[in-house]
Image (tube, rainbow, N blue to C red; front, side, top):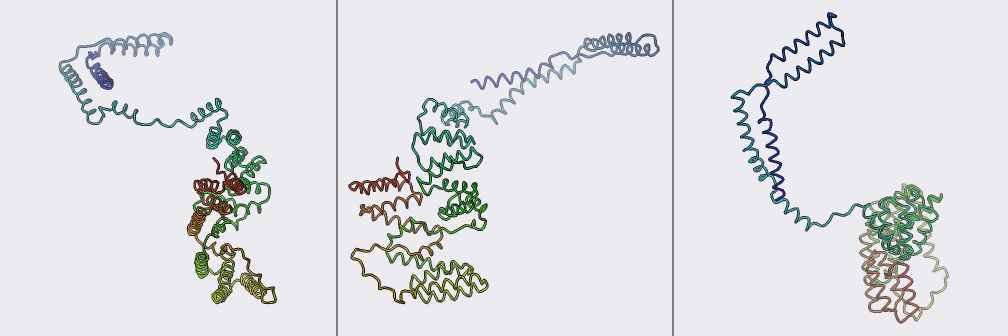
Length: 482
């Protein structure tokens, strides 16, 4: 109802605005008085020119006559003529009828008569808009002023401060979070990052200490390792920074969003080492590979060697690739394949004397190493009565694994980790197996699976305090508690 009242009022005002000028009598000026006063003005001007009156008298006379002229023009009126009256009345009638009807029709056609009801419903159903960032920060600060021991609140506030670029306040908030919630690799890196931001990107001694603590808690903490490398660069040790960043890139997951940034940093200190590298298996991957059967490992290695050989047929300039291929054939016992590959390598590298020399030295070294046992070495020791554990991948296997695509590597690794987890469900007394499984889950980024495995390991080793302590130490180091 309020909306209709407002619309009716607006329509009435519009009608009055149109009719009011039409209802007034229109003044019709006569020409006589106006002409007289104009003649007087002309006469005053002639007298002044002839010197009959002074300038001041002429000005005063002009003002007085002009006033009378204006008054006459406004006051002298005449009654309107009949045609004009009729036209005015018709215009008034049209405005009185057509304006309300036109406004109502236009509103019904284009407007929303039920707008008020819809707005109220929308207000009931639509959630409130998020508060502006500044208002939210104010509320969190007010909350923490009353509850200074709320560690989670300090952690959230520190992250918001970082987004706002208030690095000094972020560092203070993150110190409080560390004090109240306890140290983890992530929180130590958070503090170091805030301290670095507060100094415009300079890794201070305090920030470096925070990153060092983070790296000790988790050797795979990416931010800590990056900033430790940045500190080395800023201290004039570019090669140390390059080593750190190359290791980061070598261990990076295939979809890591930060590799481009690290590669740019590496380019600053070592332009030749910033090219993308294919990721080979890590120490955790190799440990998990111990769970494969010999047949599975042999099949996996032969597949990788075949892919390496195929790549070298397309691009034979990679001398290190030829060396890995020759060593892999030797490990697999494929002497014929090794000889054929050596011939292919010599032909591919014939145009590069330095690479050809390195290849010949490698072939000679391998031949000498193979002949050494036949020159009178002691016989191999008798086998031990203890059962041998399944062998892990050899150095040649590991070298060949670097030729796998990241997707192939992850599929292989996840399969090995799944088999390790299955074995530990059957026999949970293997503390080394539990340690490998926890590290492998963290490498793959499966923190939830790592937490679940930590609980399984604690239950399985509850009766062995020494093994349980080792598992607990690793769990704390990986930040899996809580």
